[in-house]
Length: 99
Image (cartoon, rainbow, N blue to C red; front, side, top):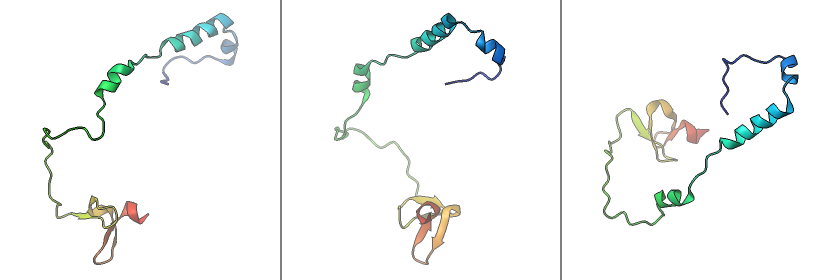
């Protein structure tokens, strides 16, 4: 819920002066702001696992590991050298896996 911090604030005396009708009208206004979602359109845009992707081509350029990067021996992700937590000589471990 967004809050406008620039609007003038009511004092305790002014808050007590709100009538029941005003409070009911505010509650009804909040209920009217809900958005109806058409479930049929949502279902058509989802792709199911196992869909036929044989005609699709990979459009991502894959770069080889750079000189300042390493592959973690636990999670097998490529990280920058600044994320190196342990270097056991043969095994490099990132900070996330070492934690």
